[in-house]
Length: 220
Image (cartoon, rainbow, N blue to C red; front, side, top):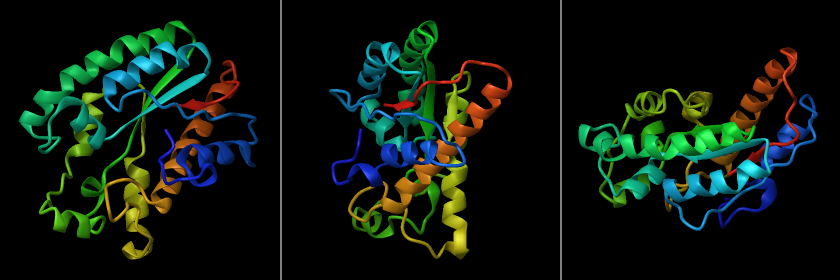
């Protein structure tokens, strides 16, 4: 889904499409943003299973702590014992049948994970979190997600965001908005570039092995 204040060229989906279709990648791919009727993980996965599996080569679903908390009505630390008890098992149970539907339909299904501001750096989003009296950092969230999603195909954007945070000694445009936890224009570019580079690299490895080349990439 394209964020409401974002035009297509500066959206994650639009930038990923442009990168994949430009040199040196040079594909002819279409990235299709899909908005499900609900923001919950279960609803989005159901939408991917029923819709994308019949018209896409790749269905990608973005997971982050905001979506997970809202989906499973848990608002504490994502890596805490209470947190994982609230969301880990139901999340895996929701993903498994959709991944199977895609696999049986010849569609590559992948989960895309990225950090929220309090999982990336204390320099990000500080004013909003200070005003909300919530300065809790969650450095363990990355390892928690990798463990929780083991066995499912994952594009891990955490390294790209941590690298962007460290660039120029931390002197860079904010990667997250001030008013809320959504990505800024710079953050969307980091996301789109890392996602596109990952897909292009996987595509090159698949092509070198003689596998079928995807016709187009579509992101949910």
